[in-house]
Length: 146
Image (cartoon, rainbow, N blue to C red; front, top):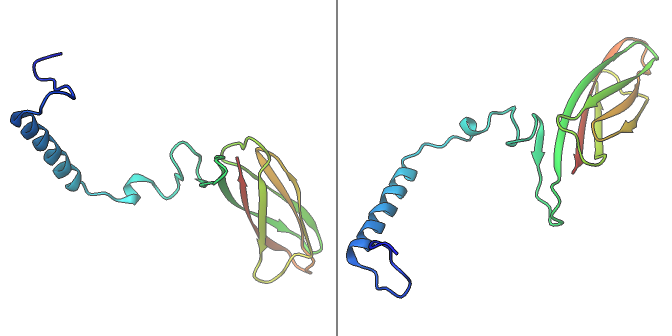
């Protein structure tokens, strides 16, 4: 043991207490003087450290590392035609995630839509345009998984 070390059985010396107190006050003062901005720490498009853009970690009482990946894509369909809108996840899931989607178009609702496939890396949604004109549909897709 060095002469400045204090063991549990040794009484603390006034000088050691004062040095510790000064260190704590110095650190608290340094921390308090920091200006913290969430925007500076995490850019709007960078999601969570170590995850791709659009990925957000979720807490889980089950202890699994659930996360969310959100994507948006568009598909332009001629009158009375259908097509497939696909999205790829920013980071592959360990297992195929639960996929939730919605389709929007201000002037025309699709007559048919369905989740065609989902995998650890992507999802495909079928959209049908029942209208008599060409429309562009916006497809929003959210995946939740591990």
